[in-house]
Length: 169
Image: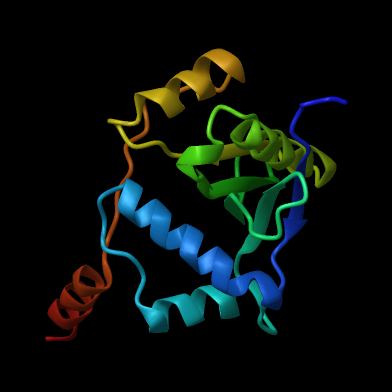
C-alpha cells in the first residue's frame, strides 16, 4: 500500500462554509492579525456563494478527511497593458500539521492551471516580508518573480471616509 497523501481540491460549498471560516481565523492567528468576526465571516461566505460572487474559494482535503486542511481565495483583476485578465491569489493557507505535505504546492498549481485555462496573462499575489518560507517556495520551487519595482498601497475604510469627508467640505 502506498503511504502517499491524496490531496483533493474542491470549490467551497455551503456545507463547508464553517470550516472555511475556521481556516480564515487560523490564517489571521498565523499572521498575528485580528480574525474576522461573525459578521465578516457571513460576508465572506456570501461573497463566495451568494448571487453575485466576488471571490472564488478552493478548499484542500487530504485523503478521506471531511474537514479541509487548507484553502485559497482567488479574484480576477485586469491588465490594461496585456489586455488580459489576471488571476489574483488573495489567500493561500495550510494548517500547520499539513504543511510540507504538498498541500500548498497543489493549491499553487491549481491557481496556475486555472489562470492558464482562463486565458489570463498572469497570476499575482503578495507575501508578508517576514514569511521567508513562503518566499522561498515561490521563488525557488515554482519560479515566481518578486516584483521589487512596485509598491503596495492600501486605504482602509477609515482612510476612505477621511478622504471623502475632506473632499466634501
